[in-house]
Length: 424
Length: 163
Picture 1 (cartoon, helix red, strand yellow):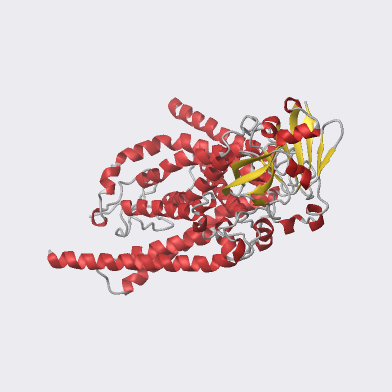
Picture 2 (picture 1 turned 60 degrees about the horizontal axis):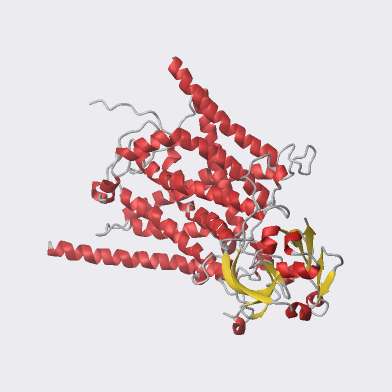
C-alpha cells in the first residue's frame, strides 16, 4: 500500500495537540487582553502630561490618544491604568509564549511566492518582534535594569505603535480563521477529554498540525490548564505590587519588601515603597532641615514659609494612593496644607490659578512637575508634611512633598523647595 | 482571476497600511525628522533599538524555543530509560521546570543581580534576597509536584486494586 509522499520537512514536529483550534483558544484571551494593555498604556501617556523624559505631544505626529486634562477624581485612576497595564501585561506573558509555541512550525515553512502573502509573512516579524520588544523593555524597566541603554519611554512608546499596527493587521487577516477553528471542536468536549482519548486535529492549510506526531503526553485540557496556571502563577507574584495587604507575596520584585532601615521602623508610618531615595537625590541634609523654607511665587511678591509657618496653616488629611510607572502602588494617609490654600497665601485667589510648577530642592530631570488647574484646586491636593500621622521620612520627601489624586507618582514632587503659581 | 486580484488587492492595502503605520511611528518618534539629536534629527539610539527588536525575536526563535523544545525532547528520552511508573512522570517534571524557568526569565535582573545601583537609588533596597527566593520557589514547585504525583499514584493503585 503506497503511502503518500510527504514533503521533506526541516523539523519533525512531535506534539499531537498542536493545531488551529489550540492556537485559536490561545488567541482569544490575547484578543481581549492586548487591546486593554494597549489602551491603558496610551492612557498613561496622557496622565503623564508634558515634560520630563516622556515623548512630547509635538514629537509624536498624532500617534497618541486625544490629550485631555487628567482628572483628579477618582483618586485611584492612575493606579488603575498603570496597574492594569503592567499587571495584565505580565500575566499575558505565558500566554504569548504559548501562542508562539503553537505557531512556531510556520517559522520553518518556506516563504510563499505570492508577493502579498510574502509581505504578510514579513508583518509577522513586526508582530512578534514588537510584542517581545515591549515585554523585554517593560520587564527590564520595572526591575531598574537599564542594560539596553536607550530611553525607555521613547523606545517603549515607539514599539507600542509598531505593535498596534502589526496586531491590528493580524487580527483583521486571521479573525475568520480563528472563528472557523474555534468552531471546529467543542470546548466542552475538549475539557472532558482525558489523555487517553486525545487525538490530533485534522490536517490544516497552515501546516500547524504535525503529520507524524508522537503519542500525546498531555491532553488539550491539560495544556490549557498549564498555560492558565502559568498566568495565575505570574499574577500571584505580581499582585503584591499594588495591594498593600498582599505586598509580601511579590517575592521577586522590590515592592514586596519592607523599606524600613531596621526592625524598629518595620510596619511603621513610613514603611511603604520608595521610588528615589534621599541618598540618590544628592540633596544636602541641611537643605531639608535647618535651612529649609518653602518659596511661593505668582502673587505680588514671593512669600517664604518655614516649617512652623507651614504648620500654622489649616491642615487637611486625605487617604490617597501613589502609583508609579513600574506598575506598583500603595495607599497611605497624608496630612498637609491644601495647594489652593497655599495659592491664597501666595496672593492668588483659586479662580486665578491656571497651573503651578512645583520644584524640588533636588536637581535633575524628575525634579519638577507642572500641575494643571484642576490638580491644584482639588480638595485633596496637598503639600504633605506628614504620612500616617508621622513626619515624612527623608526617603519619602521630608519635610514636604506634593500629593495629588490620580497623579503619576513621579509628578508628586518630593523635597519641595518652591511652588510657582501661574496666573491665567 | 479578477476575484483573485481583488482579494489580493484588499490584502495588499491592509498589509501596506500596517507597514506604513509602523514606519511612520519609527520615523516620527525616533527616526529622521524626529527632532532628536543626530545628523538628520535621528535619535542616536535608533540602531540599538533595532538591535534589541531583532535580538528579542532571534533570542526567542533561536535560543529560547530550541532550549525548551530540546529540553523536553531530552526529558522524554531520559524517562524512556527509566522504568515506567503507574502515573507518568513527564508532566510532573515539565510543570515545575516551566514554572521555575518562567520566573527566572521574567525576574532575571533581580535574580542575577543586574541593575543593582539603579535599584538601590530608586528603592533603597539591594537585590540580595531574590536569587535565594527563586531557588526556594523552584524547590517548592518540585515538592508540590512530587506530592501530587504520590497522591495520584496512591489513588490509582487504590482504584485499580478495588476495580
